[in-house]
Structure formats: C-alpha cells, structure tokens
Length: 271
Image 1: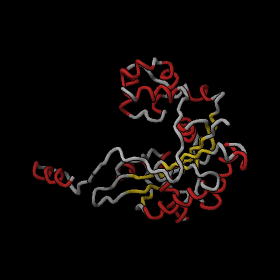
Image 2: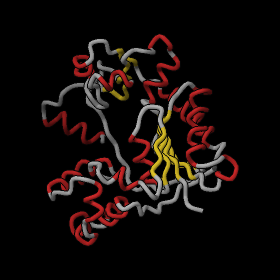
Image 3: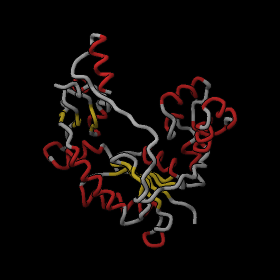
Image 4: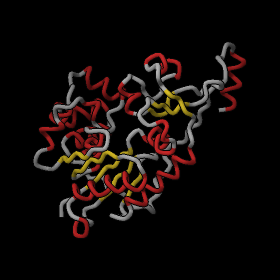
C-alpha cells in the first residue's frame, strides 16, 4: 500500500488557545508576548488578524503595536499550551500510533494502515480537523501526501483551518513553481546560497545535478535534491520513539544593554 502521511499544524497555536480560553479576545488582533519589563518583550505568537496587520513572530512588542494599534498583548501560559497539545495528540492517536511531534503544535501522522478503518488520508484529515474544532475549539491545517516533506509543505500552503492534498500524480505542478525557501530544511543560509546560484524555485532545485549540490552544501545537498524530487523516505516514528540528542544549547536574554567588557564576560561565564 502506498504511504499516506499527514502533517497537522495547529493554527496560530498560542494565540488560538488564549482566544479559546478567553472569549472576549475573539475577533481581536491578539499577540502572545513576553514581558517588556525584563526585555523578553517579543511576539511569541499572533492571531490571524494580527498577522494580516503585519505583526510577525519575534518582533519587539512596541514595533508590533506600531503596526497594529488595536493589538491586544497577553502573557504566555505555557501550562495551558502543553495541556492542549497533549489533548490534540490524543485525538491523533485515535487514528494511528505513528504520531511524531515536531514542536508543541505540529505532528506527522502515518495513516497508511489506518485507511482500512477510517477511509482515505483526506477523509482522515477531514475527520481530525472537525474533531479538533468540535472538542477543543482549535483549528488545524493538514497536509496530506506520500512523504513527510511534502505533507509538511502542504500544511503550510493553505491556512487556517484547511486541508491540502499533494498526491503522487499532481504534486509537481503545485510544488515546483514555489520559491526554494518553502522547502523543508531550506533555511535562510541555504536559501541565500541557492538564490546566489540562480536556483530560485523548488523545481529548479530538483533539476540541479545532485553532485553539484553536494559540492555546494556537503551531505545536506543530497537531502535537498531528494526532497525537491519527492524522494523523501523518512519514517514517521511512533510515540515511544525518543530522538537522539544531537546538540545542546544554552541562551539568556539580558535585562539591560551590555555596555562593558566586564558585563559581557559575566554573561559568557553564566552561559
């Protein structure tokens, strides 16, 4: 049986949870923001209305307010976000045990074998979308495809509260004209290098000789070529899987600007 992979993405997750828990926020431009007083004052998430006004994740609070005068800033409530993330995953597990989280608000689901019980991948996606909305008051956008990379791309193509199917027969017409930046693992640095080499679309990336990509990017070049050609074979791992630790990071946000070598050295020692 051909693989059927879903990628489910909770729309504007933090902001959506806040609006669900606080009905008075509905219909308003909402941003979940860190505290301005201790310099954590950046936008962590924004509602659709705030997004349309130009508010972006990572933007400083006062910049967001300049773009959207009616913006309502609320503090984060991580316990609630974790709670509803687990509740949504419980819904996913009604359909398959192959559920691989990617952050708090996104998951891949392998529903290949589930079709015998619940219908096609598109029907399962529609059932999940309706159930999440009815039981939790949240919305999801779901990509349906034959591999993880294209399911991820599909979940990003149409938002909010939508389903996008990229099947094996017609995905190239939909995907190849898109900018390379839309492809999973094409971050800013990779995208910049590709654009410098006149590789502007996913289709153009797919046509570049794989050896050339390896020269440019090393081993990641092979992965980029495979992803652009729909040849991703990565598995969706089950709920018991624990990914190996590949790196460890430590960060800190200073309460005030660092203006001397001594202050900077203390922060470095802490890190």
